[in-house]
Length: 283
Ligand code: C2E
Ligand code: MG
Ligand code: MG
Ligand code: MG
Image (cartoon, rainbow, N blue to C red; front, side, top):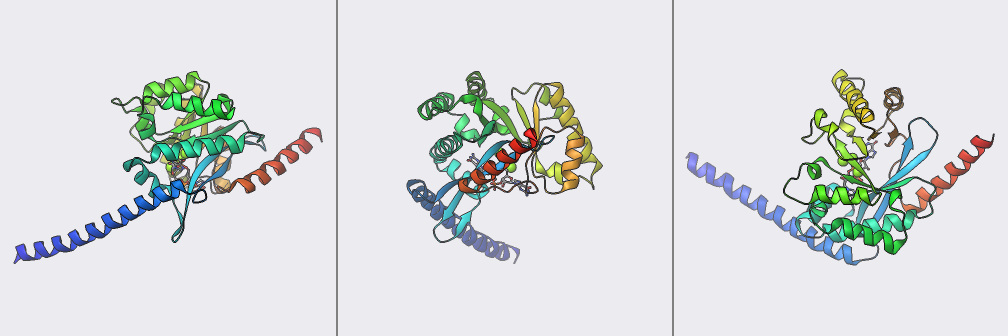
């Protein structure tokens, strides 16, 4: 009796697996088509604000996929597919070229681009970035690459070598989603990066988790002791931004300040805030 029930469950499970695999294969094929198209893959930009001045210090480039039938598909869905299906390098090159080209004349210090650990495992990655910047005429000190903790703990790959080479070119490296990976606070001392981005899960705990407040305070203090800059992700309320400012966090990113937006909109925003800045410094 138990056996037949078990077999029944297995049959259902098998069917679900089948559907899932089929959907996955379809998305994979459609992503390949999207990469070949001019319009489906887009780059949106989210401003990064100085915590202590009325100023936009930089923008983060975020990939967007406008699927012809399903509408917008989130990067958390299609990036892992691109990584598994050997498309992440093409996608990464696309976003890097686009972000550098779009931001050439923007009045900001840096444009930040996310990099997959799969890209960083390619021994030729740093050289590839250097060539792209050269072909566009982009100053490497204006580029920030966001890597995850998995890239810094990947002992088998070439990640560490690439990060060293990228920093030698003048590119800054930010550690994204800090606190969600395996690194301990202690390891923060040894990390060869320029900036720590504090994951939004800690910021959201403010007000109801003294633990999260203590963790963020410690991250900021340790980072500053090592000469690293700090950005808080996912700032959604004024209470959160006030507290982060009080803790000495350098930059703020989140829906409270700006959502990610298409290139035309971010250009309009940068024009407005640049002229506002000009008024406030002269007046
Ligand atoms: P991430 O690099 O940590 O990017 C920040 C994410 O937080 C973005 O999600 C952004 O829209 C979201 N966010 C910003 N402010 C807030 C807020 O106040 N509240 C909340 N709840 N969320 C906020 P998005 O655009 O969906 O991207 C998700 C992830 O996909 C990124 O996380 C990054 O890991 C990955 N990704 C995006 N673009 C690229 C890319 O070009 N290459 C690679 N390899 N990964 C990318
Ligand atoms: Mg990021
Ligand atoms: Mg992040
Ligand atoms: Mg994230």
